[in-house]
Image 1 (tube, one colour):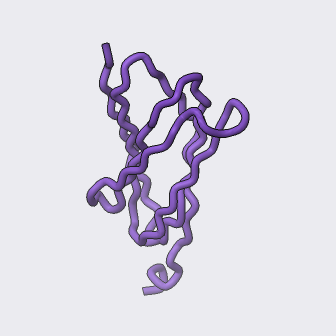
Image 2 (cartoon, rainbow, N blue to C red):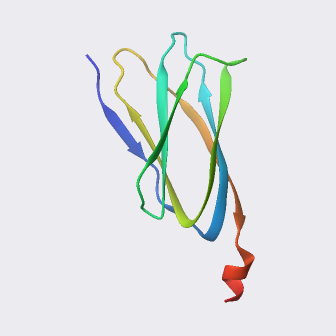
Length: 105
């Protein structure tokens, strides 16, 4: 039977920035199945992306998600509802550019 879970990261505050993209590094799974990866900017509506945990080379696979949105805070969310299928996140990496004009004003 599936155990539903919903993991929320802390809300990271970078000051006003452009969040470019996020890289997620996961352990490759032996069976095919999708995992959802979501994010919220400034406590807004979650934007979701799904990806197959079994496609890629090596034991650790990297998925890149374009964000290209401005904001101050970002939070990551990982829901899981698939019976008999686990997942292991190794790292979430955020690429962003601070808005230097916002710091001057």
